[in-house]
Image (cartoon, rainbow, N blue to C red; front, side):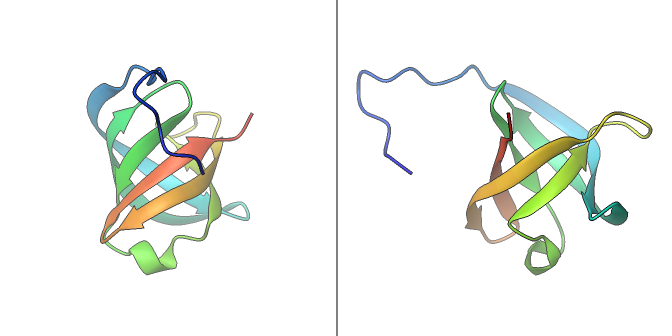
Length: 85
């Protein structure tokens, strides 16, 4: 992953305090909190970060279409994820 430069544009991040659900291989894995979200990804907090694989599905609302995610960085219980295209 390349570092942002002074001239690169960052996506607009909207601060959210939403509950979301992490799903792995079609099975509900755990609940998490979404701290912020942008068009390309999100920052989430989970009580069990070691249980979150590098790729998973994230649903913002029950019954909502899940978004495919890839973990980009981990810092304690906070994870940065990008949405798959």
